[in-house]
Image (cartoon, rainbow over all chains, first blue to last red):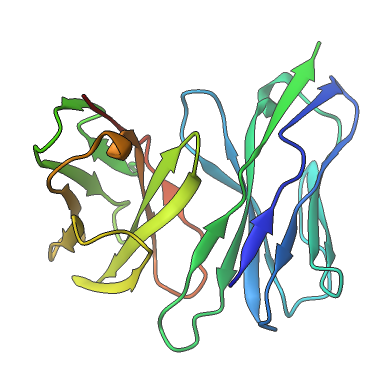
Length: 117
Length: 113
């Protein structure tokens, strides 16, 4: 069975600094998707970044980038130039490829990021 | 475009009752997924509907059911509520099934007494 592990329940970063959130997963599949979602306090969850497993190039979205290590089954999120608005719970998620039309979404337990002014 | 909306936002029920939650996806989105979020279990996938058909299902008992209407709006029903059903129920919509970006609603917070 697939699992997603976020080993850091909480992280802190100084404003304007860089922070890396860790995520590891376990799967026997070769094709899948990986996501980082952000859930600010009392606000809606939004997608931060997405990575297709068949793509070797790491995804980037402005200040957010990932370090995708397929062999190591690692998918970390780097936030550069941290801003106060980055404070949120971050969830790493895995989705099976679903070639047969069915798939699973599995979320990690989340990492709460605090941004210090 | 309007985002994903969920109603009601808050609900208080007692054990044994049933509850129906509603989700309106972003216009044009045909896929609606439901999740349960609790402090202890985190985010767990309940099920997904696409074109009025349940396409995927998580590991939840049969007390949890859902449906999708022709306009893609979806409802989730929980019968015979238990204390452990207290949670934030999130709905997410996407254009299709193929690993597309999911857009989440604000959630319905259910408290079972």
